Length: 128
Ligand SMILES: [Zn+2]
Image (tube, rainbow, N blue to C red):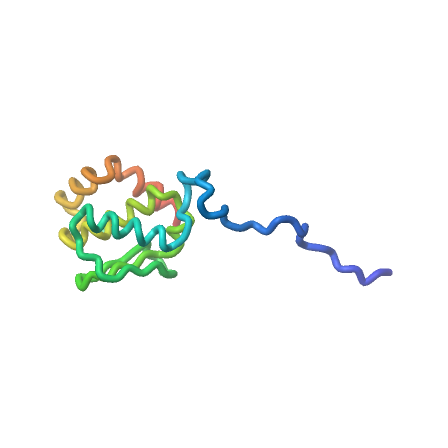
């Protein structure tokens, strides 16, 4: 009887992210956290928000958080989701700098910038 181990891995190509700059996955996911942060800054300019520090890090139970001091934190799991969901979370948080709740004003601003934002919200919630 051979002590032979069963080979668990097929030894094929490891599953890695698509090479940067291929351009074939524009609809899905972010290239890296730098690209995500650049997007946050872009939105911050658009929305006229002073985002001082931006972090992309592991978070529990939250996609993002913000502090009035201008610090924004985003869950790094967002990097694996479609980019329009990232946009949703970014705009959601940035609007909280001027609108601290989810009232009428916040909703109308969300609609101005993202259109049918409720659809994005629903998609996001099905991820967790
Ligand atoms: Zn909120």
